[in-house]
Length: 242
Length: 247
Image (cartoon, rainbow over all chains, first blue to last red; front, side):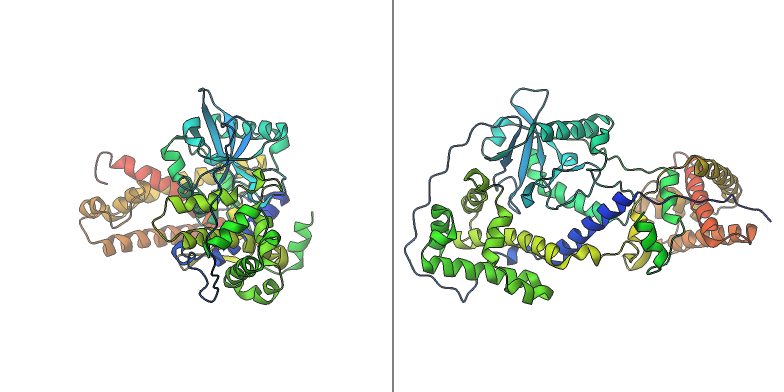
């Protein structure tokens, strides 16, 4: 009879487990609140208000798109949520890497960066979903805020990682989402959903290649087969507090 | 009713609007929040839903930070629907996000989500949430894995010599990312999809039984690991044996 070599693997780092848990909590809530968009528009029938309509204010004039701006994209580019995007410079004049912001408080994917901002709509930057767009397209968007110098630097570093597989700087290593590879991971569905939301934008520009830093090595995949404590055993809590 | 939304946009904040407007918009927000809160209805009903909506939507307290209002109204131009429905539809979408954020804070669901909770994919158990994360690479592990790989290669080579035509076709289809009902796969196997699926299942069972018989003293996870690697090697070998054929 044969004998197999002993195989013991260390678990994923604690910060990754915590972040995945926080992200999954948000995803679970999002799924729980999902409702067809068509059903969301109707006004509550019990509410009535009879007055003459007020004139709508003329649209405000916005500065031209520029590097470092955070702009709110118009609804013809995304009408399912107010989609904010940060602008970074590209190799071409008047063309910007447009980086959408994600819907969650914590980054879910390796190409997402936590910005440490308070505004709920500007907390995570989906660098993996960057699109190279001309100023002509972005001119119709609205200036909402600006990136700080460090935010611009961090976003550019992660963009270099996404575009050219440059190493992620150490200072950002724990501000991105955990790696993913498992076919049952709900982050696949999340990624597709975010890509769909930016579909119109991508058709008007050039998208970043889908080069995710997912770990598909055999040792990583075998991590899923690692023996672990059963649900609810005290040993698990001690392990998580390390 | 669109005038209420117009007034709110013009006057910048709801408190500066007429009482009717305030009442209407607050009630609107409350009704939307009620819909989304579901299980947390009681807690959410006590909150000032309108304030939650505005706080969640604004980027800053300046005018530039409230450009979401432009977005709300710009949706009207591109829609054939009634302007009020379009504006309120947009606001409802935003309120859903605000409700989610509120629930995240109030219910702290990350304490409810367990990484050890079983996952279910297409009705079948597929490990736990913790399995979604890869472990760190370890040099010692890599040495062991090398041994597993070597064993897997050997077992795959032996098994490949005994494969039936249907089994080879099924493996080739899997490697090509095609389903077992793909017309090319069925044509190559010369059978119906149910027969091809049966052949694939039979092969997997044969592989597991063979390895379990060879390593009776090993735990099931080690044998499964070896089976997993053997299957991968087998899948790599088989299409090479039938290069150029369907699928």
